[in-house]
Amino acid sequence: MLTTREAILLKVEGTKNVDANPDPAVDALLVSDLSYANDKLRMLERNNIKPTLSTDQKIFAGTMKKVSFTAELKGSGTAGTPPEVAQALRCCGLSEIIGASEVTYQPVSTNHETCTIYYHQEGVLHKITGAMGNVTLNASGDNFGTLQFEFTGHDGGKVDQNIPTITYANTVPRPFINIAFSVGSYPAIINALTLNAGNEIVVDPDVSKQWGFGDVRISKRDPNGTIDPLATTKAVNDFDADFKAGNLLPLTTGPVGSEAGNRWQADATIAIREMSPGEREGSRTDDVTYGCHETTTDDEWKLIFS
Image (cartoon, rainbow, N blue to C red; front, side, top):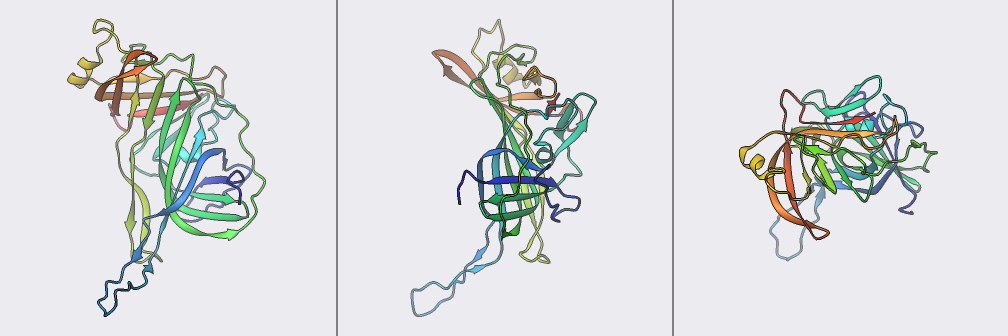
């Protein structure tokens, strides 16, 4: 089986942990850095005492599955139409608000959605159901933006099946340059940005289920991230004062891309959690770690496609 011939399909479930049967024509995700592994594997030990030093065979008592991958950060090609990653974002505890010319994703605390993931290898299909996950936005001046996903779900088994004909979105991501980035209205000069949704994924125990695993859910979240602005004098900008005072600062990337239907923008309300001196091309930077915090309800950060 070739690692270069694999595919991911992902579809929001109508009923939690019930196979949503993803369609390769509409539910495919173009991904990289794909991995698939057991999670919360239970192998029961038998600590019996006997005359020999031999260990008794362990007993398999169930496993969950973890799937992680990276997707390109890009629009659908049509303003007001959800991007290819829309369903994956919804299953990371985010709401989807569709407007006439933009689609917005931001955290919600209730009514979280789950998804079915089909992981196609060359000749084998692995199924994962009832999955929820976390997403991290990564962007830098020498690349385009990406979304790193990690999902936990139920093991739906595997079957021998050829990879179907896949349809992907035909838009191309735009580089993370020529943007109006700012923090607290200050146009900080950065090279890199991260924004982690900070979801804590838990699996409820349930002995009535075949392997004792119940629903996957988000128990709490702590959105956070990093930036690397060039250091300045205090008179120009004082991140240190903001840090010590606990000031809430608006952060925005501004629109990334110039073509309607293929633009994205990340906005957040942040508080600085840590600062340390850094270096970039011989110049001093303030390497900033921040947390995202709500000002009303569930408005810590948002990702907008337009």
